[in-house]
Image (tube, rainbow, N blue to C red; front, top):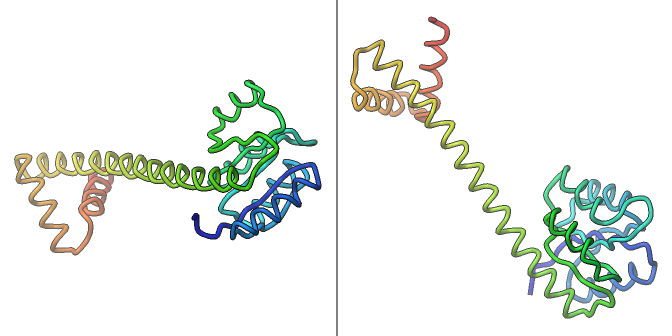
Length: 194
């Protein structure tokens, strides 16, 4: 069983909104609001910050796939798409927009429960990968600054590379600051002197 989630729902059919409200509540989740179209769903997600959005695809004003794209521009939230149709072009659009589940109406409670669990798990995995990629990018940028700082120390203090790195480490320990912060200060000072 997935933890209790705050879920935003969008469907242009009142019966479906009511079905989601009842079924999601029965599954132990909180429906933070319902919308009749994609535009309302985007606003609902902005105001409630749900853990998950479930949306019909074909709705007036803005379809569910476009709404999912707009929501993701503001903050990351997993989306489950629902459709009365099994159309290849809709599935292709959903895949391009990183939708995490696709259900075809009529929807059984067990199918909805499974889709929610899978979508949340995949979303957590994507978030972890995204964070890992961001951390790696930062580590690479930090490494470039540290290499530049070593170059400055090698040139200014006449040190070889291992000694320059040891000097950076010693400064970091003595000043109780991160190595990258010390390296950035050295690079900044060198730029000021040039």
